[in-house]
Image (cartoon, rainbow, N blue to C red):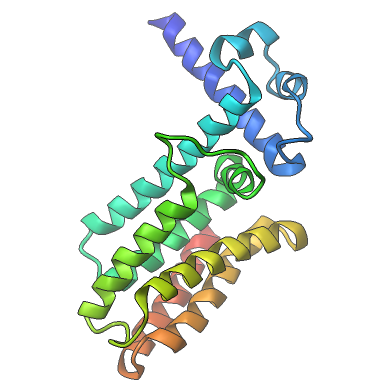
Length: 215
């Protein structure tokens, strides 16, 4: 049992070290030797868990995917309106990115040419599915204009959300991300939400930004 626990801890250490390097340097510029040194493990320990750098990348992307799904499922279970659940999901994913390297590295890997192979789904596909489902529900709940093209809105939201993180990575500290997501929602709310319902969701945006920055 103790040996299994040590193995799990070593695996987690390797993944975290790899994620930190992938996030800061990029996938191509990071070698397995770099990861071994950063994780402070032996090459044998690394190869026991991962046969190749690509396997490490997929493990990181899978962890990112699991975390995103878990946040979305939690928001579903709490009984929020569809639009509020979607907003809380984006801020939840943002919080994870601020707190640790794995979600940040997962995004960089997804935008950096690392192949996503079945059964793992591309994170952008998952985000599109979540956004589409929630926006369809928001239309039914009259929180989004009835004539909104949901497919186009979901695609634009996913691009906007990913783009704020990609651009931000190059230009500003990651702690700025909650503000950028809030700015995104201010624009989307003014474009999609009927006037009588806007104050509620604009206030929620400010609240979620404060909560995410405080974490």
